[in-house]
Amino acid sequence: MSDCGKFDKLEKKKRTETINLAVSVFHSFFSGIGALIAITRMPEILEDMVYAHSNLSACVTSFTFGYFVYDFFDLLAASRWSISKNNFDIILHHVLVICCFGSCVVQQRYMGLSMLSILMEVNSVFLHLRKISRNFDIRSGIVYHAIVALNFLTLIAFRIAVSYKMIVWLSTVDRSGIPTVVFYLGVIAMPVIAAMNCTLFYRCLRVDILRPLSRPIKKD
Image (cartoon, rainbow, N blue to C red):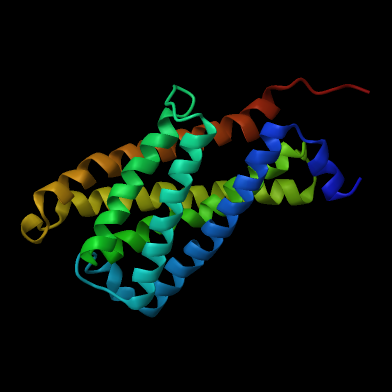
């Protein structure tokens, strides 16, 4: 069966979800690559994460800010403008991210922090591809297992490690050049997003490793 045929066979909810995931892959790929290039071209942006600035980092930040605003309203529209326990965590995540990137865009500062946080999108590429594969009921084979492996590797390198670095930075930074509101936004956002990343890691671990290992081996 062709990919188009498989897509048509999906129920409406999964078709919509798959389209949204494809858009997310597009954003994650270009923003993640953009952040990597910005850091490679200007490594000092991670040394002075408040004042260091480049045109590329500003463009990547604005692109990501715009995407999360779009995705926030798309999420609300899909849930009929209501917040429930099923979407509360993702809505909270988007609110915090929009506030943080909005501060970067308006003030044209904190580009180092912005690039560091956008590195998490490198993992999102494989996270979304994993979900798309599962929507098509593809849960085995070399390609799927490669996606799962890369998802775990990038989740640790670009989510867990980055969250740790950001929290360490926040705990040691000189607050004199940071407005109080912005500082406490970081105090709230960074630990919350770090906790979400740890929860995400556990969920992927449970579904992709622990659950398959717990299944009884079929005997011939």
